[in-house]
Length: 519
Image (cartoon, rainbow, N blue to C red; front, top):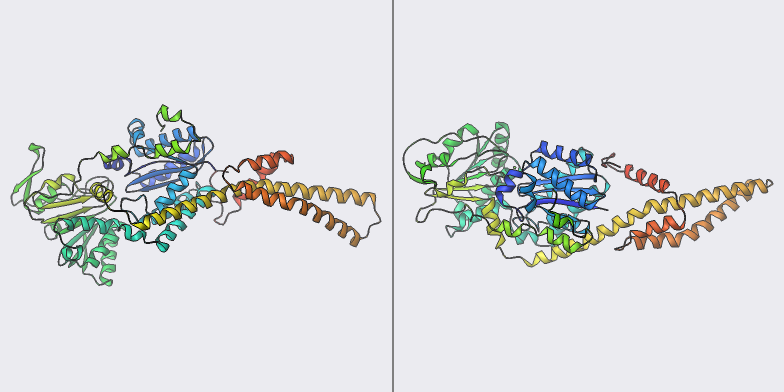
């Protein structure tokens, strides 16, 4: 196993970089295809969410793999390699496994314990299988991550360590009033822009908190209507409107939640100012609002490397070094402009905005408007960084550590299996050849005698091989056990091509019909 992950997330990069580096579905597919076409990689999977982009690969060379994966991330994200490199982190082998399992459990999420990441990991695996870029290693790893994530949520109280991003965002909006979310939301009208998974979650959460009405706007009207219908069936009051009506709805609502896949802003400062009867003064370079009665404008579009030489010179086998690289950029990520979550002093909140999109949907300048409060991904990251860690987090970390050890043992044991199979195949050939030679020397043997002799020779060979093959599998599953396969091949003079043929057959013998990457 030579698992490598190169990526960036809200822990290593500022939101401005994550916004620019976000990958469309088409870019993700092309990234996987180009990664598999590169020399060091034989498998690949990409995990791209609103606050992380990670490229996983099975590589045969560490330094070349890091350089190639970093370069590909830069090419497909549109952020230059020199600019992107300081924000990248690298995990290798067991640390890479530990990282993904931690991500799956919500330990690396912006809000600790959130469960949406499991669906995103499932989508990443499905894409790798669809494009045949995920081989045995990445299939096993991502499926293990899904199992471990579910185990963490079912066996611990990790859900209590944090809330969903939506709930946490609404709590941040309500924090300025000093009221619980339920009291703050009661009787309010809310506009939800977008009808994807996060927007649907936001709409459902708003209904549960007690808002009086939810208005859903989406570029595809049918999806907005379907979401409104579902909310109505759940006991809420909801209706769907076309995107063209967003400007008018802004004048009627108290809360806006936006999470689309737009590449540009969905709500500009002018849109919001117009809805509130304000104007934006750009000349002061600080969106200062003064009263006026103009109409709102229509919203914009609609709708989720090489490391430096000093690092490359480090010992690829040093896990401590990899851990240090994993922390790269943390200090940079923390040196951010204080979030856009604010409201001008002395102004009552007339419109509360929650932007859960990456790239952002709502112009960050709206926080300078009188009576406007904006909470976005960046301010959520800052707020959650100070949240107390629940005791359940330690329990999840223990689960992750145990599962990493189990995964490593299983992978190491699996690597020696082709060698053991090749050894037993060679032994079977020896038995067959010796029985044939005996038949030539003793032609008078009847069928019963011949069968008894053959069975006896096979039993002798099986008994001789049983203990060493069982023991070598046990030894190979332990840390540092990779060399036992080489020792077995050397001791029994096994043909490397025979072992390779067994490995190829094993890779192709899979339940999903061959989604196995390059063999």
